[in-house]
Length: 226
Image 1 (cartoon, rainbow, N blue to C red):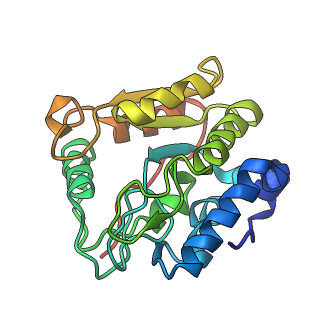
Image 2: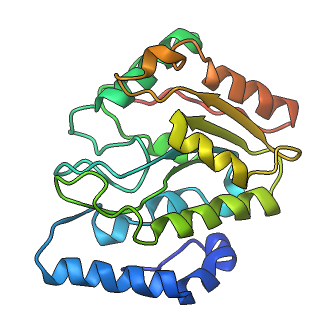
């Protein structure tokens, strides 16, 4: 497991790699490989969210739960897939909400959200790896300890970050965030099973930009080029 991290994140998280849960997690991943299990995303992309969005640059957090478990999909950014891969249903719904919320937004031909990450949108999954074709297979192995620490560090060391918490699982992470320093926007998950329960019409993208402007921060360009 590569720990080649962006320097700002490494300064914040370095001690985590010495803790028992991370030692055990590393051993678990090695065992999975030894058994011949296919793991997504590939090793060099496990920490892609942190390496694409530096600690200093984080302005927005979109929290997912698990990486996609299909071949060629996951590349370390929550809700995002590689170019050339069919856009997953939840991301299709995110694009639909963007079309309704952001004037002139056009749904792109792909689902790669790197453009957001490069602007300061941390696309963080709570679990950073998964076994091929087995959703949730690496949950409760230690990743949640690590990603909870990421949220705590952002809460403690930064201010005016906008956290987008979609669905019950993500909303439980609100307990880790100091709401006197940060903004939390909650909605239903964009999954087809829950999208009509309050994700559509939530206007989280325009609300995020308005909050950023209030703090003299550059708004996010949500439009993704084809």
